[in-house]
Image (cartoon, rainbow, N blue to C red; front, top):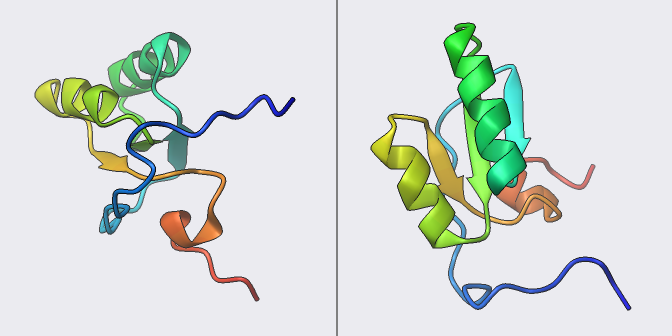
Length: 82
């Protein structure tokens, strides 16, 4: 059984990521949120990506650049297949 489960929002279109940062946090559950806060407290620019819209909305309320998408899909990360 795969460890990755599709979310209920899988049919939605991924956000276009228009930000660049040295760190991409892929998945902002409990652990990802802690990582975001630690990096932000140390002035490290980050971009967060998650496939749960609720998580993205929570981070946006704390002024962390966050985008809806699936980190397992290179297209969502802006990476070409070349």
